[in-house]
Length: 394
Image (cartoon, rainbow, N blue to C red; front, side):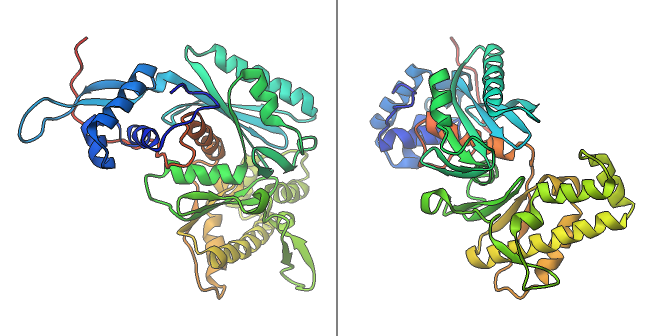
């Protein structure tokens, strides 16, 4: 069972590894009970994973009430290797290294303003190699997130010029000889909410990402829903009626995208760059021009969220938006506008816990699933479980 991009696992192998990832430290006997599998089958798979170095034994658990040997406990071996997640944004790219248990390390943000795509790709390669040089373990896989439509690991449409139909996965896969997963930012954010919030917390959720475009990642019954050729969740191009003249229509992106809102703010502030401190100060100072812009943003965002809530009836809608992270008070305005609308289902509206890294960590989860050959199974990260351990004597 060698971990590579061509790996295949049996159903039993997948389930045993899933148990160790999600429930470790865990014993072979507990895995056998959880899965209703023969102990010999579990032991054979366990031994192969241990020999491979993908899992490690960390101590002994507590004996049963009847006494007997204390069970040996196993965990995923996070020193086996790591993955790197990259987000390609309009004027920068961000990177994050992640262990196989989902713990993030070494966040990096690099400006690409006025830099052509070829140079951006070279910069990404340089930073990947730099991350690799700083580690003793091996790189197992890469993920890339971007605004656009991704289908079968190919870019069908992209917000960044030059990326449409470019085989980004092959380009970096050939350079580093590892599997590469492509995903749009909203889907990555939805994966983050599903995999890092705790087992079973969100079986049906929608994560709305507001960046250069407005898009939605959709989780149904624990699985990512992509729709026809990956087009599910492309809501930014949908029309919205004007607040004051309903016969006039603009797109959701026009009213709600981060790019559009920040352009309006920079225009009234007479600045050529975003000054987040100034935005926060003007908001707290009740600056009329800023409040008017933000009220428009809240109103139109509420219309979008109400439509999503009525159409999909999710357990919750999670919002991933830097403007809301900067001004979380706006959530009350958004909820207030939604409450005024006559819709049958009003899902809870929540602000994501980690807007800066959510998509990156969701991308890391996607590539971890791939390198472990567990694409179709739920992995739950940072699921701390108390256990009594004793060191194994060497």
